[in-house]
Length: 72
Image (cartoon, rainbow, N blue to C red; front, side, top):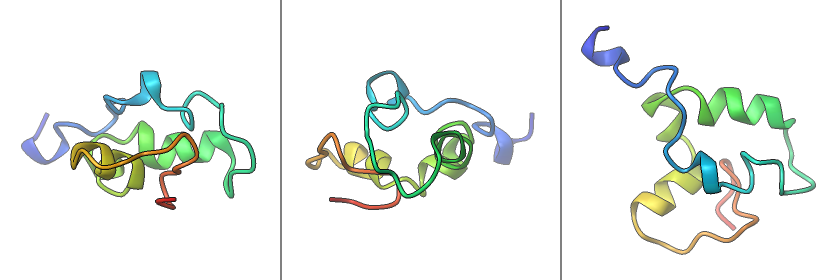
């Protein structure tokens, strides 16, 4: 595996406790399978585009309804 693809296809380290990933958030703008494919299962490429991931990495407040595309 090349260095640039090291995390490609890896699951987000926060997936186990993520209410979005686990289908616990209603009224999402996008279907759950699409959110998982774009943000959660793409490794660092997807994680860096996820608002939840970035907030968690910065030790900032993340609510149950914070989505990958909207920091609420």
